Every structure is written in C-alpha cells, then in structure tokens.
Image 1 (spheres, rainbow, N blue to C red):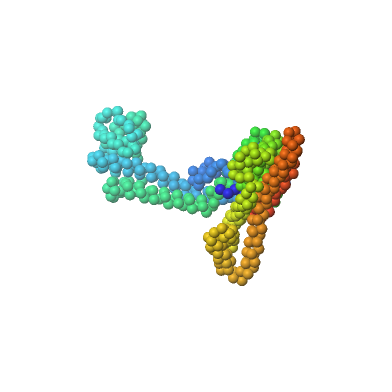
Image 2 (cartoon, rainbow, N blue to C red):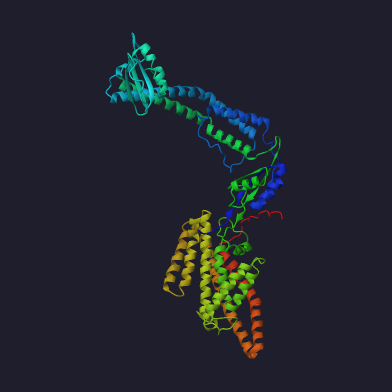
Length: 607
C-alpha cells in the first residue's frame, strides 16, 4: 500500500473547570494533542431539573422497556454529549409519553393475548397427545368442568417427566398422557373424589387445566378446532406487535432511548462531580492512532474529572501526520522542506530511505570515507537529528566503494567488484541517467495516484497518462525502434484524451505537452550530475594519491593522504549532500508534491 499522510482526529475535552489544567497536562504527557480553542462554560453538570427528568425516564423504562425497541444502553464514547441536555430530555420524554398513551391499550391486549395463546398451546399439546394415544378419554375434554350429575371430569397439567404415585383413587377413572413439553392427568369421577386429587397434584408441581374461552362453543372436532384457534390467537398477537412497532417508529422511540442512554452514560462517566459544578470545554486535534478509551483511561488514572470525545471529522481541514516506520522517519525531513504533503499526496519518505543513500553513495563511493561517515553518525546518534542520514549515507558509500574498489582514495587495496569510475566514465553517466528516469517516472505515477485519491483518476489518465508513455517511449527510441512505437502511442493517447473532450482547448494542451516534455528532458539530464560527481570524486581521490606519491611516501605521504581525505570528506561530502537534496526537491518532488497540507503540531508536555 502506497503511504500517504493521515488526518488527525477531532477531540472535545469536557472537564470540571478546576481540573482543566491537569487534564491538558495529562493528555500532553500520554497522547499527542494540538489544542485549538477553549469554549465557554456550560451549565452545571447534573441539576435537580435534569435529575427529575431522568427519574421520569427510569420510571418509563421500568414499566415499558419490554416493549421498547432494542437500544444499546452504553453510549458510544465517540458521540459528543448534547449541548442542551435539559431540552433533549424534554423532547425525549414528550415523545416517549405520547408513545405510552398510544401503546398502553395495545400492551394490555397483547398481555391478554399471550395468556390465551399459552392456554391454547396447552390444549393443542394435550389434543395431539390424545390423538397419538388413540383417544379414549378425549370425549371428556370438551366437557371438562361441566357437570354430569354426580360425575365430573378434570384435567391437570404436570411436568413432562412427572410420575403419578397416588395410585388409583376410589371412584375415579384416571389416565396419564405425555406431550412434548408437559404431562396431563385426566380423571373422571364424583366431585368429592376429584377434590381429593388437589393435594397429590400440587405435590407434583401440577395445576388444573381450566377450559379456555371458546373451547365449549367449538362445533368442529377438537383435533381440528384447537389448532385453528391457536393460529388465530397467534395472528392476533402478530397484529398487535406490528401495531406496537409502528407506534415506536412514529414516535421515534429508539432514537430518543439512545439519546437518553448517551446522556446517562455521560453523567456517569465523570465521577465525583459536585452538584452545581460547571464544565469547561477544550477542542483540538489528537494523533490518528489515539483511541478514546485510552485517553479517558489516562484521565481516570490521573484522578482528573474530565472526559474526552473523539470524532473522525472536525471543523475545517484537519492537520496531517506522516506515519512511517522508524527507519523511514528521518527521511521525512525532505518532504517537509517543501511543506506538508496533503492527504491526497503520496508520502515519499519510505522510498527516500532507499533513494537518498543510493544517490549519495553513488557520488561518494569509498569504503574508508563511508566508514568514517557511518562512525560519526553512530557516535552522534543521540544528539544529532541527522545521524541516521549520515549512517545510511555512509553505509551506501561503503557499498559503492566496494563496487568501485576505492578505500581512502586508494584503488589498489581492494579489487573493484564492478569498475573503476575513471576507466569507464560513460557507464557511470548512463547508470546515473537510468536512476533519474526511474525517479522521474515514479514522480509522474505518484501524481496520477494522487489524482485518483482526489477522485480524478480517469481525468488524469485522459489528460496526462499519454505523457508518461510518450516520455518513456522517447527515451527508449535512442536504443530500440520499440521506443518510437511507444512514443507514437503516447502521442495519440494524449491527442485523443484531450481533443475528444474539448477540441477547442487542444492547441493550448499541445503547448503544455511541449513544455512538459522539455522539462522532463531537462530533469532527466540533470541526473547526469550524479555520474559527474562520481567521476569528480574518483578524480579527486586519484589526485590525492598522486600527491602522496610525489611527497615520497612515508610520513609525509601519509600526512598528504590524511589531509586529502579530510578535505574530500568535509568539502565534497557537503557538496554531494546539497546535490542529493537538490535532485530530490527539484527533479523528483516537483512532479507530484505540492506540500500544501497542514502539519500536526502536538503540544509538548511540561518538563
């Protein structure tokens, strides 16, 4: 994934005004924070008027929360508290009490309906059990509780696994049947004998099964009538539940429940706030990686009566943060020389961690001098901000020193793994130009990537995509006919992409194309100076060795070598550093980096 700057997150900090300084100090010590404004004081935290309205809400919740829509009782910390909690509670209570007036009759009907549905479900289970068992006593069910002179019938509901241990009672005909969920004891006999069943049935956690309303008036058989009555009862329950749902939506019950829950969470999140205490509000930005739970945890551990809220959006354009691994952070100094990349521009720091040492080492290839630079950077790593640049540049110089066979200007100590620069200067120049082509092409591609992030990717392909193909084709044309074909494709691409959209603007676009190609050519040949400085470094090294030989060797020759290497390290090292910076800024960055973003500047913690 190509890195780009990340926007900071918007923060609101609410604190008891006496604790505001301690809250800001705590945040500065534990989280990068950039304050912007201190708002005016709010009303007291929890007034008697607020408490009375919250009590009314709790009473409603206790009575009706079973019929309220599901709402998360824990507010999201990223949601800001209301600016006018009293007004919010008044609106919420008005809506909820209006819902209560409409919903109460429906709730009463639903409760009665659920009771009837439970009774019909028991009768349906018993009917099914008797049908599976072959009937027998099923003719008595419809008349249960009805008199037959001195003979009566009764049905008792028992737990599913209950076993009747009372034996046969005198004068009673009994039968135990089991359904999927319950057991049923059917008994027929004189009234006084049936009354004797009450105590043993209660001992089994059973109860009588009374006839449900509408059972005695059924004309169809029980096996057909009971299931139809159960389905009708369930249909009525579904109608009542739908009516309750519509009433909840009409009065926005879920919205107001969540709003009040967030308010309750807010009042509970700042513990030990005295009655009548006022809050102060601080606004600003925090680093992208900060989480609201961590911020509030730091505040709680510090004993600060404050609460932080975070949001991914805030007023205006957010400040930006370059997020890179440790080895790439020192190279952020290069894009910051032009300004902060905006959020739709590539952050080139990770690429520069490779390119900058490569350019420096190519121009300053010497094992011994590179080792000195690396050692200086390592020795000053705790005090010098650019120490990592010295160390990586020195390491790259050592690597190219092996390739060039140069150690403290001498080419006779190590064999060259590749070549001696002065022996094949054209190869040195060609490689430097190849490096330039790669960097410039990368800059053009990064520009297109930024256009895509801005939502203009297709427009860039139409207007500028052909330029990249034309540039590469023109360079390849020096070596192969394929380059000429590629350049022709790029030219046609450019003409079609610009001419079809707006033919009248094509002359101006052609002038822009010619100017762009000239600039690309100049930028490309500017990288020839990389090879030129590599040759100059080799020439200076050869001059130092020649002077040392003319000094006659020994102590005087060694002194010449020391002084010569010191001069090259101090003077040419500075010049090569400047040239590397210049190539990065004016040949590479100019293609894609505007530097118009706003850098995130956190508040330094107190010492």
